[in-house]
Structures are given as structure tokens and as C-alpha cells.
Length: 139
Image (tube, rainbow, N blue to C red):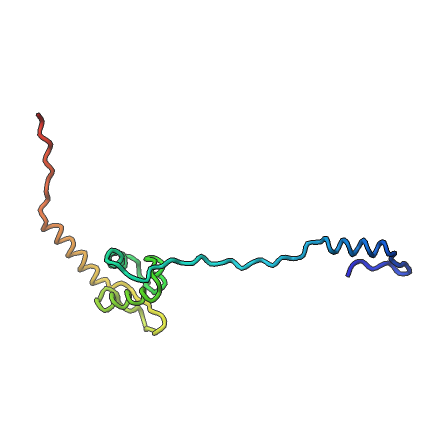
């Protein structure tokens, strides 16, 4: 309301007008605008290169694989991440971690399959003959 006059005194019209003009000059509280979240531009289709990337990087993700971690890492939308998790779970690359819920997929990497893949890759590298580069012939 403002400062009340001490007892026995009355404000003059000039004082009242001055107080009213000062009130209108004060800045009003501005409400902060809510921070807008950046819109994600996640892929809704998988092409062959992104499938290969997911296939190679998924076993390296660690012990916790969920829809949100797959979606964040590979920039795909949630439904595509769920499909990828289901696909790799059927192929045996992922195994469920604990009891499963229909709303939240929690998986971990199947260590046996990953070890078998590494062994197969090492065997393929050992079988492949090493080609040596020949030195350029001197003239």
C-alpha cells in the first residue's frame, strides 16, 4: 500500500499524485518463460549403414541397455530402438536383465555371444594371409 502518514498528519494532493506516478514507473514482475527443449531430429527408418553401426556398437554399450540409451546413442526414435532391442534379443546378442516389464525393456549384453564373435573375428584375421607391400623399384 505504501507508507502510511504518521498519526495526525494527512497527505497533500501533491504527495498523493507523486506517489501514484512513482508506482506506475516501477517495472512490473516479468514471468520467466519456460525453457523450450530442443527438438530431437531422430531417425525413423534404419538404413544399412546405421544397422551395421548399431550391430557393432551395441555390445560395447555396457551392462545396461534400455530404449532410452539406444535412442540417445544412435539418434533413432523410441519405437525403432524397441525394435532393435527385440531383434538383437531374438538373435541372442542381448539377454534380459532381471524380470521384464512390457513398458520398460532392460537388457544386458550376452557375454558368451560377444566372446564367440571376438574369437571368430580373431580366427578370420589369422586365416587371412598377410600381404606385404613391395618396395618401389629403383631406376
